[in-house]
Amino acid sequence: MTEHNDQLTFQNPVTRFPSISPPEQHQPEPGLDRDLEPKTDRGEHSYRGTGRLEGRKALITGADSGIGAAVAIAFAREGADVALSYLPVEEDDAQEVKRVIEASGRRAVLLPGDLSEPDFCTVVVERAVEALGGLDALVNNAGRQIAVTDFADLTDEQWTSTFETNIHAISRVTRAALKHLPAGATIVNSASVVAYMPPPTLLDYAATKAAINNFTKGLGQQLAPKGIRVNAVAPGPIWTPLQVSDGQPKEELPEFGKSTPLGRAGQPTELAPAYVFLTSPESSYVIGETLNVNGGMPTP
Image (cartoon, rainbow, N blue to C red; front, side):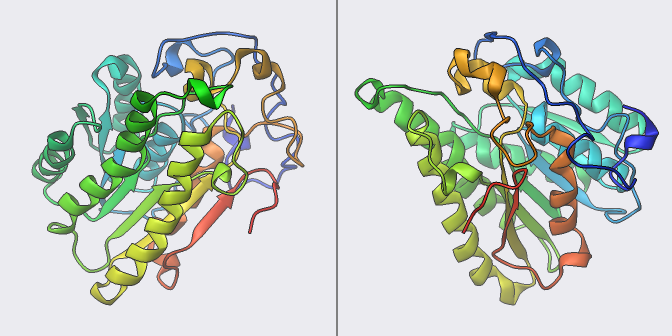
């Protein structure tokens, strides 16, 4: 991508990014951006900041790749220092995001660990606060997605693991963060279009995303009087390592995202402005909202 393709340049959304036809491929869970084909656009060369998050201190989970990486890069370009939470096996991707953030003139703190472990949900917050000198923005983005064709094959182990990572961790991380978040702080959770349109192969994942929507609206009301805003972003089909690490049936990868009105899958960097908006003071009267970024797929 060139600087002329940044998010502020007038352009046709149909052709801003190519309609990809990914080859059938597999990576072990959780997958790496490093090995993905074709590569994603996380905004390294295209996101242009305007100072909307100057001086902010953010913790982003699942920040090594895909949407989380794009949000981390965008936050840094907007002036924030960022703590990156990710699984230890994703170290190579996290190091690359750290390099991009530091090249943008901001601090990047690496915090490897597994959010499905309850104790780490508290530890990651405390380490972020210590390293950043405080915390005023939280993005709960980490997620687990494993496609299962037949419901009879959806094991208790997978169901529990998906809920531990996708919704229980959000509750735990948020609860740990609240003691540090001042008035004016923000929380943004990653929901999904599947909260409204659950694919038959993603029953556990879709259920967690619907729960995230509901949690966001309820917590938003509770924290509003304290001056802490809670919102969510619901991505549509976005090309990330999640899709090739059993997140989609392999035979469906070449057509991924082509059923959207725009006719293509989204790129992670196209999600980033939504998270920036919901974190910046521009959205001061927006609470409990789910901002859908899905290429035109109708939602409630």
